[in-house]
Image (cartoon, rainbow, N blue to C red; front, side):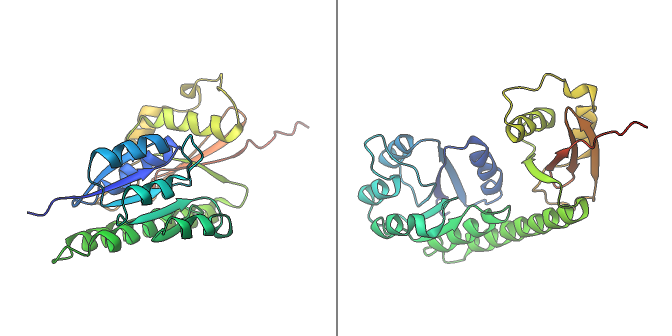
Length: 248
């Protein structure tokens, strides 16, 4: 029996790591490791074998880019640079660290691309291609989800913003409140969510993003604070300013 491939994902955004965990857990032949800081990532690499590194463009306290430090620590480990920065901003860094692949965080289907790159980079020694087959299925699910988001956005209209995503790991109510707080730039929202919607009933109705069974097309809209929210059965949370009521 082959040893599961160990993938280290490094990102200072906990929500990104949570999404990564929800995505990679669907790959039976992958053991996902995560780190929120460059220092933590180097500690992981120093203490255990890592078959592939997926990293944001983070920097160590001494100013050394993480991907360069990873390359110095291991000449052969594949590196996928997964960052929101444009290629022009990271091209020199990627070249200096001999990065294998670059993926820009630009949309909900980015993880499908990351999955494909990871499977290609670490699957060379897998004679039966089990990881590649599994990765292909997950990537297709992510692509389908990205298309569902696109269709939902078109049906909702351009005034709606995608502000969050529920993966089923946390309570839906908590995810909704945190998504709106982040979107609005607020430290907290005073209005309790239960005054607008039954969060438990909503959670029972909707389903996480990645599941084996087909999801029904469900969309629930309700007002919350200064916003109108729309939550779909793909787990996506949309928001727009609450329409003003005109009095005559």
